[in-house]
Structures are given as C-alpha cells and as structure tokens.
Image (cartoon, rainbow, N blue to C red; front, side, top):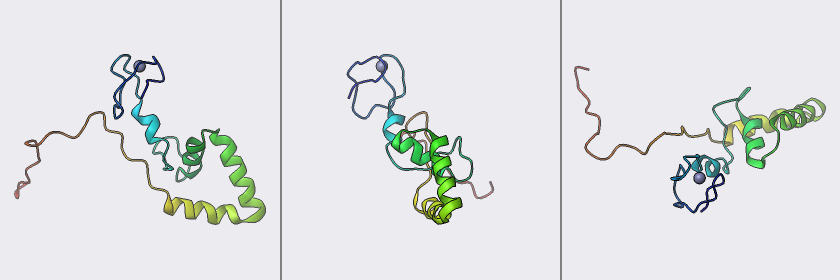
Length: 109
Ligand SMILES: [Zn+2]
C-alpha cells in the first residue's frame, strides 16, 4: 500500500510509514464499525457510524436524535447498535513483546 501523506510505497501491514512516520494502520482499523473510546458522548455509537461512513459526527447525532424523538426507533436502534458494535480495540504503540517476556505470576504477589 501507499502512505497517504508522503505517497511512498510501504509494507501492507505497516502501522506507521517508514518514511515520514505518519500513522497509517489506524486508518484501516477505522474501516470497521466500532465504538471509539475517545470523543464519545454515551456509548460511541454515533461516533463509530460517523467514522465508518466518514461523515460529520454532529450530523449523525442530529439525525439519530430526530429519528429517536419523532419515531422512537432511534432509541431501540441505539441500544441494539450499542450491543452489537464492538468497542474499538486499544491501539498499542508497538507489537506485543516477544516470547521470553511473559509475566510470571507470583503467588505472594
Ligand atoms: Zn509517509
């Protein structure tokens, strides 16, 4: 794939562009319908929908609220979305440590 920022060809599974350091992995992660952990108002449903479709979250909230207030379907839809949409996984700065760094559980803490 190509870096959106500098346009250079980079590894397909790269999280960060090796040339300019721009995070590229997160863009792909956003293509899943998830509830982001940051910037949410209630459960992050509207924010997740907005990011998935790449539209303004305020617009999503407005439409959702109007639908909820006028038809009542919005409330049910929100709760269903809350249940079915997974939470955004924590974005780790680096890959998991290699073998040999596993935590040892001490019985005496
Ligand atoms: Zn780049």
